[in-house]
Length: 309
Length: 220
Image 1 (cartoon, chains in turn blue, green):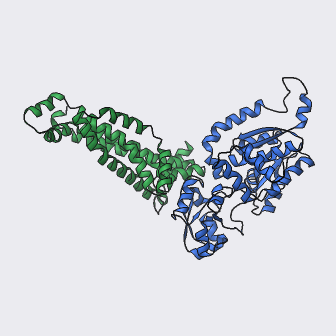
Image 2 (spheres, helix red, strand yellow):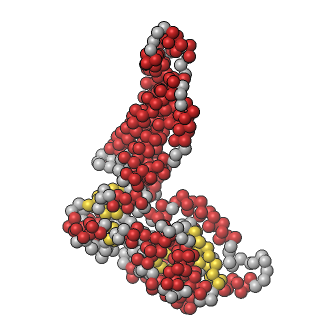
């Protein structure tokens, strides 16, 4: 089993909040008999539960879905900040969560450890095959949250860099990344065999956080492994190098939904996803990181701007 | 137990010790960072501590500063300094110096306080200058306590120098972070054992030093 860097980056938080998430799920079970009487039956049928990971960017995406579902006249119950995949996927499988933003590559690997697909189409096929009955994924957004080979605009211009393969023109480069990057399939060995380039890891252990960015901007490393949804990419106009050979497993944003999500509900989520580009996600994340806005405000602001709300 | 076996196997494998990121290099880096940090802390804190201990002035301040500095979370400090100074060695070394200063400072001023006041008075009465009182009486008699301060500083620094790897430095922390992120707990355990071994070695050296530096007249 491999955990993604982010899963581990949020370890401490997840450890505490994972328990909270669990506790929340057990007490707020929408399928459990209501204790307060009333129209419990119709509530269970008409309410969609939207969940999110213990990760701010994931919560923003979940909130986008929640608000358009409400706009479409559905009752939505929010179940955010649920720890890790090991915690929330069983909840989804058990029918306690109806809509959950996921990431294609990681979801595939979690569902099927032997899955070999590396391109987006293959990954979606593998996911659809591995998902249990009653669950399906909707169309993925172009926005993604995955590892990347990212350079400064100056470095890209100087050597004419567009894709990872172009790094060959820059000679031997250093990449600021967590130390485990050296052992990942998309690390130096993978880069050498896929693109024939020489990369050395400069270990900085904050998972593409401010220290990694600092190392890149200071020129201690020429490349940095940043998440493609990281707001700093838009803020500093960094260049994410293209990966035509799918060295890095794509992690596009994809909603996992239950049977309770009908065509109408799926349609409104699709409409959001169609406009959710990498740049949009970076900007939404930036509002959380730099402006400290709540996911609710960020989501309603953007959806209104796009005419979706 | 299985993890322990795997960790010992890892340590026993000579291949893991060689190379640019082998355990051999990392152990030396770890030791070097620790010695450097404690040496810098000693250069700063010992003179200040002696002054405080000798003059009995500013003791409240020294106690307050050491207490406050001890409460600083070192990982936060490493990150903050890393963002200011860039990744590399300066940030972790500086953070480790801050970590070491309280123990050394406390050791330095309490080493002089531990000296029997009658002895100091006697030295003064026999015509010694203040500098002579300090250098010939107080410092030698207080030496075991001072070394005790250095000893506990070194112990803390060795245990904390693993954080150097967080901001692109080397040291044994690199193996710990790698093991953590790749679920290789044998590797983490092996690195921890090496840190423990360094800590124990430092304890042995400082214990010997403490005995050696205790004036013959004070030995029992």
